[in-house]
Image (cartoon, rainbow, N blue to C red; front, side, top):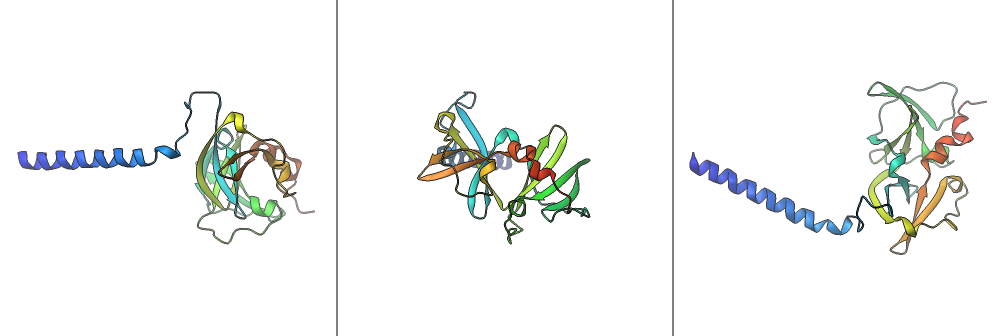
Length: 186
């Protein structure tokens, strides 16, 4: 019995050592600022047509796989339908199609960014969710953000890092736009 407890203790120590090593190897991906500070910006990175965008973390309620939907007749093709998300009605919109682009062919990587607009839930289907990104709030850019006319009304800022531009896709601006509320086929 004592030998079994000794083996279990050794396995536990090895597991904890592995966790510590993995944590240390990922420390460079963590923000450099105190997360309680005010100069810190966090967002969820996602892709549309191979271009990475950021959604402000405080505008995303949750991220889910693309669920099965119930089709809604008489609506534009980018409104994919509605679904029940834990007792709440969720409207699903294919963001690529909404922007006038073909939908992604890689449906296994697609995810839904769920927005809570004062109790009304909107799900935006994106090509892929890449992960979290953290930036210094003082590094935000507000000019020369995109040449893409379809996305331009919703790009509210950007950050530069590693010779790349991380565009901030304003989910609030999208949800409040007149275009997203014009769903009926006329």
